Length: 328
Length: 209
Image 1 (cartoon, rainbow over the protein chains, first blue to last red):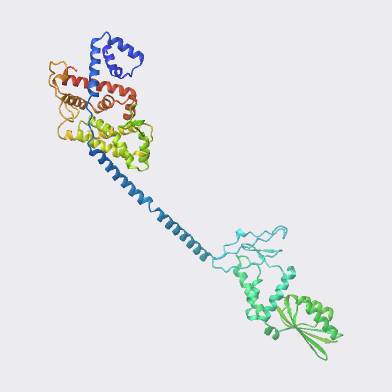
Image 2 (image 1 turned 120 degrees about the vertical axis):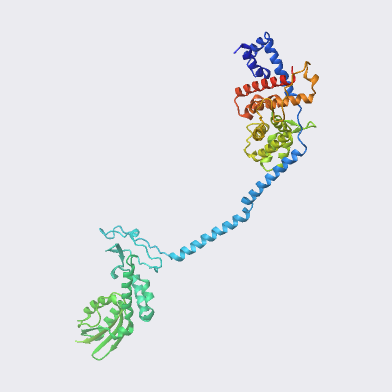
């Protein structure tokens, strides 16, 4: 590459003032002594002049309107798409919100209709109640069938736990562990039971023993058996098969008063006495659970003759009692 | 930078708002604001396209396409460069595509657009120069301009682009780099070769310059 070739390659940038000061000085120095490169520079400048002096063409008068027309058409397309997607929002949003709400309400309704209410009971206190006996674990209880009737459980403050196949269940406390108020409730229930034997089942149902969900069916059978047993002890049935006791005393009148007093203490109702010349017959309805206490109290008054009637091993219901007090 | 975006004045000497103001309005859906941008820039875009294409009708088509593309893509314009630079870049792209289509058409018609003696608009005359000292002395101004256009059309696209942008439209090197996305050295070298080619073409066509 000759010096002129190198210079001529830079003449374009030289014309535009796009060279550094050093490059510019070198070119100017060369141009001052090289006619060929100076002529090339002149031709380049003339070429540039011809290019710059080209007449400008004018846009046709319709060009602006045509462009704007196309642009508006494009904007309308965008608007149509925008409206299709977003314009109906004022309508779409409330409709969609209402539909969502409807679905939720229907879902809740169906859920409630299929599952039924579930009553949760408090877990009885476990510490210090019965050492060495595993506590009841609610999580281990089998799921209750959805259609099962809810069972109102009696939660004793002093629960006993007995092992079953699938864990442990809580059983009702014995009568002696019950509070006075509970006993009073029992008496009230028994009274109503005696008065309204055919409809007594709901009353006893209220004080059903606590049963676990897992053994609900077997326990319910047991309850039904007991309920039937108690129901059978209507006044009529008890009159036909009363528990008959007889005692021999020195003073029939005094003994009668003591017996009446004892019966009243033990919650007996319908106490009647038939005073004869040789003996006095007292009939009463006594809570079955107090029969043993009555029997012991009677021993104090006088010796008891052999008894007849159903077993004494009952702690539910009301017993029809017949006591014969005779002199020695 | 030879941008048209800042501190414009209308024919009455009143200050006009810059392009960016109208661009923001167009982004909000104001098509009337786009009309102002069209009115401002259509002539320059048309001249760029015309010098690239060498055909007025084709240039009008290219300008329409370019403005429509700009409108469609206006939300992507972030203002990193002047609006005129961005619009020129779009116009150059559309012009390039249109030339490819024309080349294909000429190819099927048995012509060659890259033939140095052929242009899109006609054949460059290679008549020997006359003895006159100045081309204006024996050629009318219109004829000279036609010869210049034919010489421009004889260039390859890549050289024609830089020549049109720099020598006809007066864009700076920085603007050309931004429009064509080329490094500075490439712009300089392409411009040198384009000028050399046009100079030689014109000397052949017109005699002494």
